[in-house]
Image (cartoon, rainbow, N blue to C red):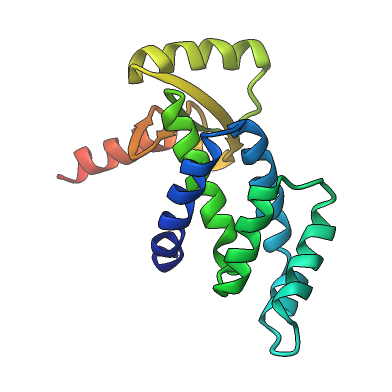
Length: 177
C-alpha cells in the first residue's frame, strides 16, 4: 500500500499541474472513471499479460470507461500503461482528488456512524465539524454499527471520536489503571 502511494504521488502531482490549466472537475471525473476500470480484476489480469500490447490495454480501458476522454487524459493513460503502472491508477486518482480538494480549500471528512444520518442532521453535523476543524469539509458517511452510538470523524490525519465505543474504552483504561 505504501509502495503504491509512493508510486502514485509524482503521477498525481503532474496530472494536477496539467489539469489546472483546464476544467479540473472534468479531469477529476475522468480520472475517477479510469480508476474504477483499473480496479477490475479482469482488466488488471489482461494488462499484466505478456501477450497484451500497450495499445490493446489502452483500448480496453478507454472502451470500458464509456466516456469520451480528454486528449490530456488519454495521454496520461498511455503514460501509465507504458510504465506498467495501471495497478497504481486508483491510488493516483485518490491523491489527485486530495490535491484538487486542497487547492479548493476543502478537506475530505469521513464520518463513521452506527446509524444512517438524515440529510438535515448531516448538514448540522458538517457545519459544526467545519467550525471545529476550521475549514470547509466534504463529508461522506460510513456505517459502522460497532460504535454503538455517537460518531467518529476522520479529516486527513485528525480524528475526533465521540462514539460510545471510545468512551467505554477510555473507562476501561481508567478503571484498570
